[in-house]
Amino acid sequence: MTFWQTDATHDPALASWVESAKGHRDFPVQNLPFGVFSPAGKAARIGVAIGDMILDLSACATAGLLPDATSGTTGSDSLNALMALPESDRRALRVRLSQLLTESDKRSAVEPHLHPANTCTLHLPARIGDYTDFYVGIHHANNVGRQFRPDNPLLPNYKYVPIGYHGRASSIRASGVPLVRPSGQRKPPEADTPVFGPSVRLDYELELGVWIGQGNDLGTPIAMAEAANHIAGFCLLNDWSARDFQAWEYQPLGPFLAKNFHSTISPWVVTPEAMAPFRMAQPPRPEGDPAPLDYLTDGKDRAHGALAVTLEVFLCSAKMREAGMEPFRLSHGPASNMYWTVQQIVTHHASNGCNLQPGDLLGTGTISAPTRDGFGSLLELTSGGKEPITLPTGETRTFLEDGDEVTLRATANAEGYVPIGFGECRAVVLPAR
Image (cartoon, rainbow, N blue to C red; front, side):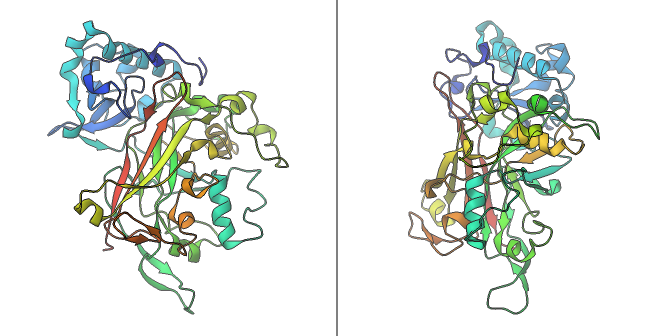
């Protein structure tokens, strides 16, 4: 099957016997994302989110409930081996899980292997060998570029090449792990020399993460027609950024200490199979923009390469939490605002023969909408700190303060299908050490 084709597991009439899955915002039975979790007092293992519960796949495999081709990949404390499976084996596992969680005669065998999610600890889903962050949100690129180059916000290569840089895999953490405010060099406009200290312009970035499944041999590119077969799933990614460090250090070699101190991801891997109903045509490029070069061109990708996902960012200050207030939504907008598709960034990454490996993580870069209500960073929302945001408590923000909690959410929607979510990508800012 191809990456946009649906099957019986997407049927909106499917209902799980797990009560909390019915109408669940993120994890109805039509989703079935993979993750790594620890039940209370037990070791980490692979699970599947279903409503407010987590199904232990290792226990299911031991009980003989899973397909033989996949049961050998579920006894680990990471998803790397499962991610490396061929698409046909992953799809067979999804079909079996759907049956186990919807057919009433399977309940007695499966129910003992369910754990309440609120009693479990979630971990990074894979051992991340490499992390690359792209820059495919054209509205973000325009907004940021305009602050530094008002007459020429986009550099000449932007519309020809998916721009990216290699990030730091060791500092990626799962949702819920606090972020310590970084210290580093910055050069205030009025100063003659830089100073060292905590960042005063700490920001978030709203991104999607793309997990690599099957890799490619060193020296062997990945063709556009095959790129979707190398994607194991999606998550949310907050690429925390120290804008004051970034402005001082980014020339000549780009992001470094402004980006490598912490990145937060949602812990559940939403599979390409689950996303099949939410594929859509890549929006046409503006008139006058160059067509992608041949190696980045594919008719099926143009027709189905974009994702019908709505992204949201929320902020909750310490004062708001003390008052029991709900998080304040800063922005929302569609993921289709990406200038390049996820398949195009995979193909471009491997186009020089770079070998991608199961469990590698790619970030899309900040995804912003063309209007202010969809901007994906405070740098954009506050016009570089010139236009503060007012919170419901009357507090104002230009950049993040200690105690602020930032939460990213995402929902995939398509007419005739049950919406699915990604779970939360959340962290609180702690003071610098």
